[in-house]
Amino acid sequence: MKKFLLAFLTLTTFVNLNVLAADSRSLVNIFKSDEDFIYNEFYKVKEAQGEQSINLLALDHYNEKFPLPPVPYNRDEQFGGWLRDTSGTTCLNTRGLVLVRDSIGNITYTSSGCTVDKGEWDEPYTGRLHKLAKDIQIDHLVALKNAYMTGAHEWNNQKRCLYANYMGNKFHLLSTNGKENLKKSDHTPSGYVPPNKAYTCQFIKQWLNVKLIWSLRLTPKEVSAINKIVTESQCDPQGFVILAQDLKEQREYMADNANLCSSADVTIEKF
Image 1 (cartoon, rainbow, N blue to C red):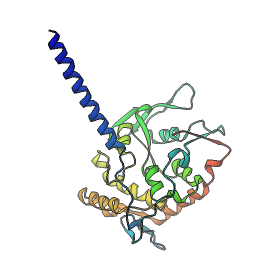
Image 2: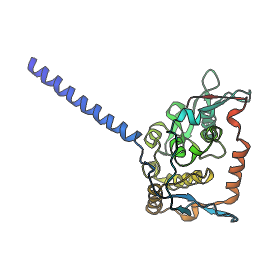
Image 3: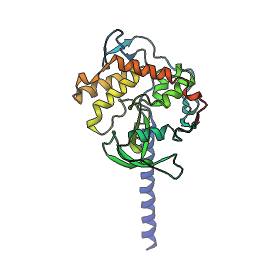
Image 4: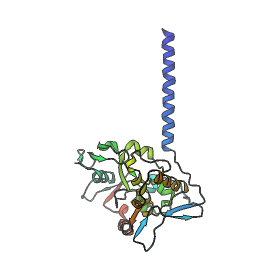
């Protein structure tokens, strides 16, 4: 009997260690970036000056070394955190404001009235309906690290903080499934595409739109993946055409809110 118990415990320990190892490998894969940004070329979405429309699939190609930041990425130091309004208009932080904006049903709050508790979120990455705010993470569609590596390292902290809290449109910040957001991490479309196939083309359009609005660079690997996804998903090319006026309005919103993060009416909290 003792030999049997010893063998059983040994087998159980072996299985558990293997499960832990598998989980560890999964975590490594989740947080491992799919980019090293070491290139002698890069791309940007073509702005088409003077035109009434912009094709997000039309890219300018630059045959020069991909500019790298002089200082390593540090989310808290370079992008600040969520802003919380202290003016009395609302006590919600940016996360709360996005949750309220994206909910298709009634919102309930915790006892403080300053944190969203429940709502109804038609979550785009999975296509499932979520009702608990704790299951939702707010995703920067183009992750903060990717933004930093592709151009935001050239900005001041004010502009980076604005990027982190930008609510000038409904796709820069998204209410997403927490587990899927962890899988996405700082990946480009070369490393992550949401499992909801009905959202694939829109995801790529929104990705390119963020890159355009903020004049962020695209890597060759990123562009190759986007072209492949657009072709394989049979995305309608016309669906990637936006009005130049839309871009103008986004840039005006950015200018109007350039000092948002230094306003006396806000405090900055950890993401």
